[in-house]
Figure: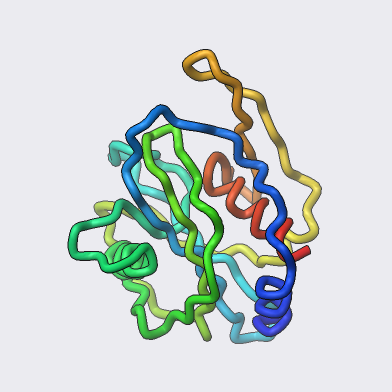
Length: 191
């Protein structure tokens, strides 16, 4: 899918109902992630930028995720949070990013209300990984998520409540949880 096709679909189609059904007992801490779609230099369509988190982190160690994190007092908006975190974690310069919109917030089991910010990155970048936070940076063709039937949902229970846990495998990566449901919802929105 090209940038123009994505933007047309994202902006003109009505947001599908989310498959996310986890609700966390309050209070929640505000956070934002950047769903960065990178334009391929070889005409291969948009690529979804993902990271594998460092194994020693308190929240979601070794999990595949989007760059992002909690809102800090100096952040003027959720967009600022997502852009700041992407710069801190992987060196993605804010001026290389064109924000296209956002998805509704998601409540996570770790106590965050995470808002995904959708953005286009005009070309491949040279990333500078913060090894204290990120173990790996990789990209997955958006087309993979648009065409795969390899989507799994498992029912889990926490505090007497039932919720769905989503899995979207890609090669040797196990993309699951909030990251997987955000991708699933994005794909549902543009399909």
